[in-house]
Amino acid sequence: MEGIILAAGKGTRMKSDLPKVVHEVAEKPMVLRVYEALVGAGVKRVVAVVGYRKEKVEEILGGRAVIAVQEEQLGTGHAALVAMPYIEDDNVIIVAGDTPLLKASTLQALIKKHLETGAYATVLTCFLSHPYGYGRIVRDGYGKILKIVEEKDATIEEKQIAEVNTGIYCFKTKILKEILPLLKAENAQKEYYLTDVIPLLLERGKVVETITIQDETEVQGVNDRVQLARLTKEVYRRKAEALMQEGVTIIDPDTVYIGEEVAVGRDTVIYPNTYLEGKTVIGNGCRLGPNTRITDSVIGNNTEITFSVIIQARVGDEVNVGPFAYLRPGTEIANGVKIGDFVEIKKSFIGEGSKVPHLSYIGDAVVGKGVNIGAGTITCNYDGKNKWETVIEDGAFIGSNTNLVAPIKIGKNAVVGAGSTLTEDVPEKALAIARSRQVNKEDYVK
Figure 1: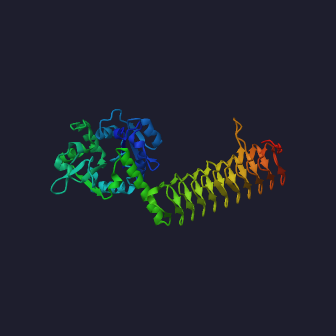
Figure 2 (figure 1 turned 30 degrees about the vertical axis):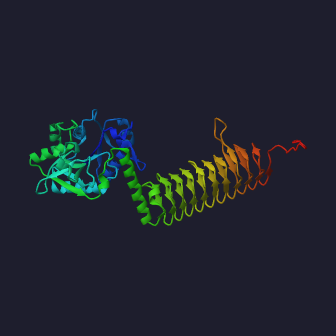
Figure 3 (figure 1 turned 135 degrees about the horizontal axis):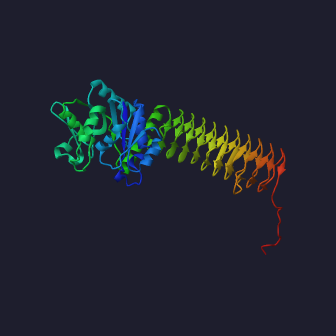
């Protein structure tokens, strides 16, 4: 079984300069979600029909699919015709690129029925509570499918039908190649509809089967930003419920946004307005949020992160981060560290048990164990052209309002006096003071 993704349309109602199918649902472009569903169903080769801003769709698929270009968007039937020269298998499954919640298991069931019945076409249908905008499935008195009629072409009676075409089909390739060139654009849109293949097959006495699914959200398409938001929320809801079933506490599932690839350990508590994105891994017994964003990061066990942003970083066990901390890419925090309020750390290692309590910037640094960094400390790592490293060895004490001008090394158990600006290394156990001597002017105010 080979597959075709119809992804050529602009999506006028999206009011966007981008093709509709590249818009993201919960961090992932719709067309990529559809592609992954096909592959998950066992489809080994996929052809993507692209058109409007085709380079954007090609960029997302990244060589995964064969690309067929529909230069002029003349409807789904024409799009399928454009793809047919690339189809080599005896059977083909065709899917719309804007159905992001589609499951691989559903496509597997469709493929299974198509192959087992030997049908020339098998249509995936669904009953919708609000079928407006969808093609209706018209059946005869025996329940056999007669045709699929689009919303704009349906009669008043046909519009009352709740069973709709999902835009997902399996076909025998040979007969589809014969019939597609016969389609006519005799409809309100003046387009060639793939749905019109069905009555042409029936006229020829060919068997057409259907399979119906129950979950209507799975096959809902996206035509505008409202529908995009609705389906995105559904993805986040499903993920939150799955995590809660696995022992994660989520205070308010409606206000957390957890990506599908995120892993969270049991007994972790997630507070409102928390975003867990990318391939983030959270350990057991953590407390996250509120108002926290963690992206592509690894967090250890029993760590607390509050009102903070963490991107592409690693944080150990029993660490306290925030409020209002920012851990940037390349940061690694060992066990038992405290990262306090208004602290920014970039591409640095902070050793076990060290503390950066508040109002500091640590960049391109290696900080040892048991180090205390006072408020307002800055590693001056950038000279306007190059980045330089700061090394603070185990047990050092850095006084408040200190500037460490890199490259520089602070030895073990050394002490830096508050308010110092250091440009030279400090030996072990030494006291470094680099500030002007205090001068008092008597009777100055008088």
